[in-house]
Length: 112
Image (cartoon, rainbow, N blue to C red; front, side, top):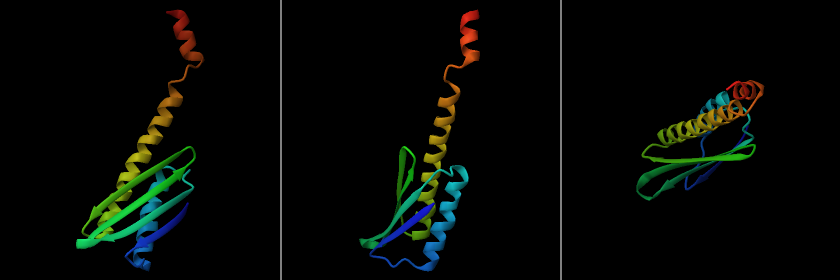
């Protein structure tokens, strides 16, 4: 997965870059069809740290953002939100495929 990291009013250090890459690997563990991710880190006035990310997968996009006092905590929470969205999407896709009418469901309907 290609990861683009952008900073607004913040310098992206090697530590932040490695932390983001490490956390994004968690997402590919659950769903490996993600093609690219855009991550934006922002420092707002009054020291509010914001992390936003958009993940592109075939036929869908996922977006999450979080604000914390610590940038690393904001990144962790944002990745957790993305992880929940991806798991929900993956679950919907597998449930949808299993509920389609197959040979067994047609036979069961004919017997009833």
